[in-house]
Each structure stands twice: as C-alpha cells, then as structure tokens.
Image 1 (cartoon, one colour):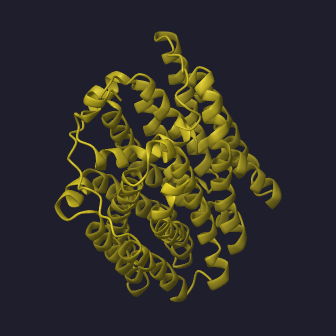
Image 2 (cartoon, one colour):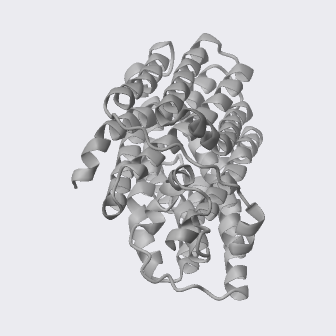
Image 3 (cartoon, one colour):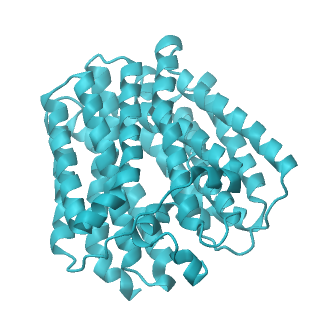
Length: 414
C-alpha cells in the first residue's frame, strides 16, 4: 500500500496528539479529585470540553479555509499545549473549566484537520485500510497514554509537562514530514431538520450515545477511584473499556451490513444496558470482575455511534452523505455537552454507582425508541455497503466536510 507512505508523518503526529488528549481526560478527573473538587465540578469540566468541541466542529472549516491545514494545525496545537501547562499553574475549577472549553475547541479542529488530510492524500482503493490504520493508532495512543499516570503520578508538575510535550511534538512531523498542503475546504451549510427527517432514530441514538459515552469518558476515573481502586487500577479500568469497544467495532459493523441494522442496534444497546446495570449493583466486589464488566460495557457502548450513523446513512439520498454525517456528529455533541454534568450531579448525591445507573436509564429509553421505530417504519436492506461502514463512516465525517463542496456529491453520484 504505497499511498500510505507519504502519510506516515501525519499518522505519527496523530498518535502523539491523541496520546496527550487521552491522557488529559483521565488526569483531569484524578487530579481534580485529589484537589478536592466535587464530582459535579469534574462533570462540569467534561461538559465544558464537549461544548468547546461542538463549537469547534462548527468553525473549523472556516479556519482551514482562511489559513490552510498546516497553519491551522500549528495554531490549535500550540494553544492546546499552552492550556495544558495552565492547568497546573492555575489550579482552580473555574479556570480549569475555561481551559477545557478551549481544549475541546482545539481538539475538534485538530482531529478534523488530521482526518481531512488523510482523506485528501490517499487513493480511493486504499481509503478504508488507511482509515483503519488511523483508528488503530487512535486506540493504541489513547490506551497507552493512560499509563503515564502511574509512572509519573497524578500529583505535581511532571505529568502535565508530559501532556504538553506530546501535544507540542505533534507539530514536528506535520511541519517537516509532508511538503503538501491540501486544498482548503469549502463550507457546508448544515440542515438539522432535513437530517431528522431522514432518520429520527439515527439522530436520537446519537444524542443518547453522546449523553452516555461522554459521561463514561469523563467520569469513569472518578467512579473507579471512589469504589476504592488504586491509581494503576483506575487507569486500567478506563483503558479496558476503550479496548473492548475497539475490538468489537468491526464484528458488529460486519454483522449490521448483513442484517437489519436496527436489530443489531437493539442487541448492542441491550448489551450495554445489562453491563451498566451489573456495574451499578455489583462492581467493586472484585477488581477482576469489575474489569471484565467494564470490558463488556465498552464492547457494546462504544460502537453505538457508528451503528447509528450507518443506519442513518442507509436512508440518505444522493448528495446527502456529508450533510448527514456532519449533523450526526453535532447531535452527538448536543448529548455530550449535558451528559457529564448530569451524571456527576447524581454521583455526588447518590454515590459513584449512579454513573452506570444513568447510562442504563438512557439505554432503556433508547431501546423503547428503537422498538417503536421498528414498528412504524420498514427496514432498509443493508446490502453490501462494505465491511468497514460502521467502523469507518464516522471517522470520515469531517474529512468529507473539510474536503468537498456541498453540491459535489450530486455531481459524482456518491
């Protein structure tokens, strides 16, 4: 696969950047708890991050259009790196919330730029494999980055310096390793009402997944720490959930390509609900058992967005794929903005087990909506959209948004 060679520097940049970002999410929760921040305060920081992420999704194409990929990447990475150091220099919940908002904005833009760049630099016949490699880099970096915490500790300056170094180092391969600069993107106008008409279930599912998954990513370190786990066990707990989702993404996507996607979505949601209920009532009795159940939870919860997006794309018309995928990411962000704060409020009042009780309640509601939609609308045969659709469709959302004008799909018949 010769077309991937020029993209190796960009994949290296993605790995260092994703490692730093994944590390920051866990460290914020752990260090915040050590500083005496309430769970609701830590949850609000997660809400601030996703609020910034949502706004970043809306504005990044304008920034890229104005200055290009390399300059936009450099500026956003520099801001994110500086914000990381400010976290340790100014330990205050209000300051941290503001920094997390800015970080969310920056990382939304950075992820968009990376995916747009990858798509612009690869041939169509290699696209799925390149994006699969990107996902492997993503998961490996995020999981591996977690283990800097037990090595350097959550206290002190060193761990924040490591995060800043990782973010800053991502600038090196982008600046020196690639002499190309993809064509700046055109802007795409989002029509959320049209996407809702195309797939109400897809939109609702993405909101539900945003509520649940953002809560898990933000507050799972707090949950693990409050049920008595050590720092190393907390990091392992978070990593195991992410790994579970990574391993099952492809098999579930493969199955949904050959069966009614809503049935697969129903089974997956039910599995996530059962795992969440077990973690609510039985976690903490055994560390190994808790690890096993969070693995099961991640295996079912993490692929839900990809399955929801694939279902919505089945009903999209010609020229609507960019619109649908960009809108679904925004619907996810709508849920992600509120999820951490709501879940943390329940945790503070009723205990750490409410993190997974909150997720279970969301999944119960989603199961009811799926069953209702299955009765009111006939299914669309999945056909042969490709084994990678559920795994990779969502990773190209903003790549397409950044690369192509709104009307171009109509011209090439996509």
